[in-house]
Image 1 (cartoon, rainbow over the protein chains, first blue to last red):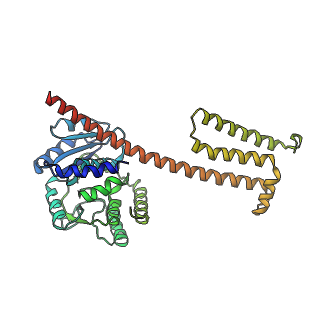
Image 2: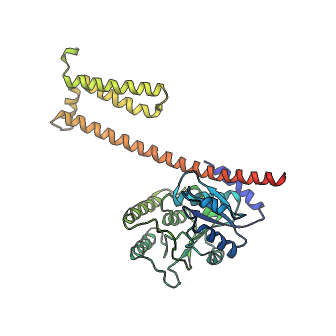
Image 3: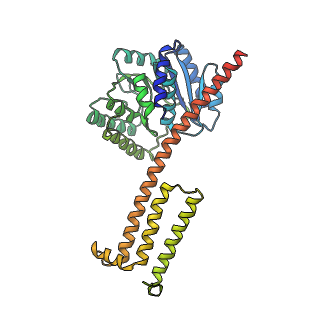
Length: 250
Length: 125
């Protein structure tokens, strides 16, 4: 559904003159952080357009974001989770003809001043998606041993499945070009899509690379993945990845 | 094959299957159940009806698959059928979820488009 419209909109893309980069901010109950995130992006990336995806927040995230002129806000009528919310951003970026889209989480964890590093990498290394990694060539980032273990596990899995070294496969701080946006606006898994997207892009013959970045430790709120949920998370993600590998290329 | 020769359990089975068949018929007639999903229920109803009417069929079948206690064979068949039906339901739910996601995203995108158009409208006035 909608694929034809998408390809038609690519033509519209070539005619566009304004911003080339879209910053997509997925946000669920982030009224305490969203303003700062938007201001930081406007300061560090004055040429980028900003799109907030308000994933049916229970607080005033959408209203707060709208107070800043020039910021586009999509209010989703139902909560879709991070995957569905980001995919909305991918679809928007495709249709509006942006050359690049970058995900910057609404909790303020991702630093907009690091985006130029991603842009440089995508252009110099000719990648289709660049992942901002906390663990690559950057001073150590404190995280739980549990998450470390999980990331290590994914590292082994990716090396075995798609012959790719990824140090931070769960990082959502990513820059996409149109090729990867096209693939992911067609399919992006719902729950914890980051590791799966790597496999998906590789299967579609696209290039994924990483660049080391700094990230901020969270100030408000807490991670969505609790110790109780994490085995379930791992099982679901691994299953999703294995199925992505088993599926014929489309 | 005359009514007097039926056991109590057969009457029960016949009644039950008729209830299923009639319910499905009326549900489809009132468009509360899609024809597509009615098929499997009609088949289940017919299966129960036939097995209740002809007891020997079940005995024959249980001998065939090496089950000594005929009702067990009947239950196994019904459970297997129920599993398939549940799998079918899960597929339907997954399909609905995917459609729902696409629609939700589309509504969000369209809302933004409407807002932008309204703003343009205001500016041009």
